[in-house]
Length: 404
Ligand SMILES: Cc1ncc(COP(=O)(O)O)c(C=O)c1O
Image (cartoon, rainbow, N blue to C red; front, side, top):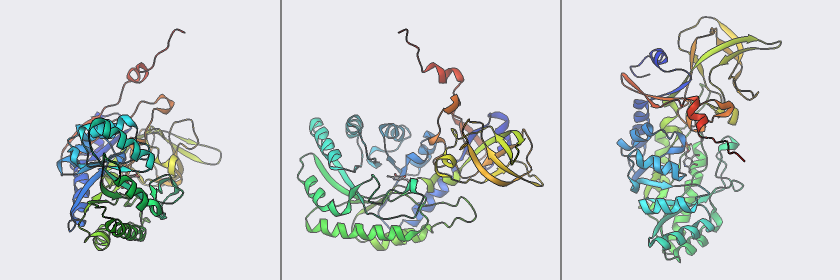
């Protein structure tokens, strides 16, 4: 990775661990910003994809903003140096303490998802003597053609306000004293490979904007969300980023608005490896297994979405074995690849999961009382542990045993 041999990191950091490339993150950010450079734009990196402070800091240094969905993510963005004027606060269930603290410290806009949330924001901003900048996230009822678990723009998904009710809801928001309407927002899903669903969505947005204009409701920001897919395997087709930029330019480019983007996976997905060790190999009656030292609690995407990630040995191997690659957790879903023609790896050998920079470490847990694994970042010929592994004591000491 960059100028660092992964096998050198393995000598200093105990596996399993995540390993990120700072320059890959930078390259991805540049590629994205190049593709949308003809637009007045702001790239608000979606922190949910990878919330490590060093990752966010790399993006802050490139002038990026942040898309956050909790006060925790808001605090991460601020700590990593993102300017509060570049933070959009998304999410379907913002709570009063999240709204008030982010209003006090500042933000670009709340992406509001219901009338109840709007009224809560109005009440809190009135109590604080503030005016809250808001956009509504609209649900365009569009099937993004992605995995059901990461599709967010269909009418039966919990997200956004129905497109057909939008005008009415904007008019209501316009009547509230402590609300300033600044924008419109949409996010139809993640790992999207077909640009046509974006095209349809943006055409709905531009029509809604026309109707709002007639009602003298001024929209300054169009937040088009994230969702661009990346290549996980040779057979994945991925959207062309330049074409994505052109589609937005055609649909929304001459409306006089700032276009906000919320990419997550595109910025960090291919910038991360998960480095792991083979603990055992075993032969079952019907199958052979390779048991790794990482498990579903460390990397949840395969168990959660059936995601397949390439796994490659750190040292070239000759010969192949047909195996299931699994983790040590006591669940059958703790399986990373099934009936896989794997390199003939030996016990004690190291290997790496590819493309785990997005929705990797952030989805991990301590299931089976396995402490969270470290995150390491590489920059040119250096590497640093950017989140250390807690000790077993650290993990256990958070709990107490009251004398009842
Ligand atoms: C509101 C919102 N914006 C942005 C993203 C980032 O999506 P992606 O990582 O696919 O770019 C998500 C992820 O689901 C999201 O929910």
